[in-house]
Image 1 (cartoon, rainbow, N blue to C red):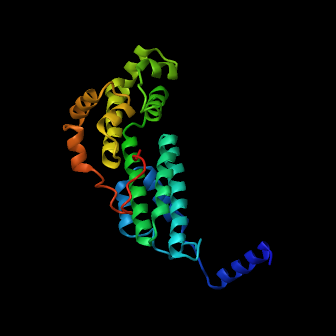
Image 2 (cartoon, one colour):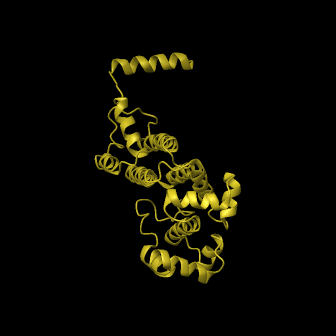
Image 3 (tube, rainbow, N blue to C red):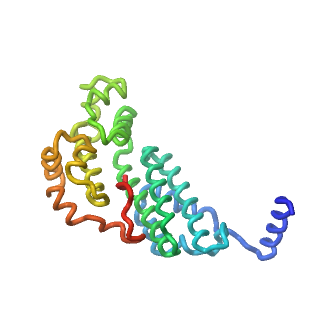
Length: 259
């Protein structure tokens, strides 16, 4: 039987059974809630278990768990692209997407897939909510933020950013502080410490390895800056937070820190 004939028979069967998909506006409203940072709406959707509700949803596999995984990938793809359109840095969005889709490999129950879905959409929504605070930044400042995110492991200077944006260091510094509220160096420091927090939570890297990875001048300098921003030493932070978030999937720790 050819594919065309097979499709015709499949379509006829679905018509006879009066199978209908959910109204598209519900799906669109959900994706918009994620990309706009509407945490209440997204959390409400998760609490209602709409992701695992099969009524009005296409069947992509006869295996229920595989079917759910396929829908997870589709949801993640849509969320990723809408978040990029709404202002999320593209590299961050696709890294986040890849991270969550790869987590599917080790999941074998519908409950685990559903839990990861909720974590994924809430993660994207939270990042978009924070991003809304920076909407309205000029192109040079946005380019700086993207550059810092992509090169966070390196030693980044104002001169690097000035060369990247084509502006003078002094003008760029004034513009950045006016729009973001803090200096470029303070922003870079905060972003490096945020990355360090994730590494301390989800990885086994030693303090010296983290300090080197993030291009701090020394381990002592890293500890000093971490304590200044977070209010405690890196060791104490790890003792309090190590692997406390990833409790919805298997016992395996993430291979890399979450972005």
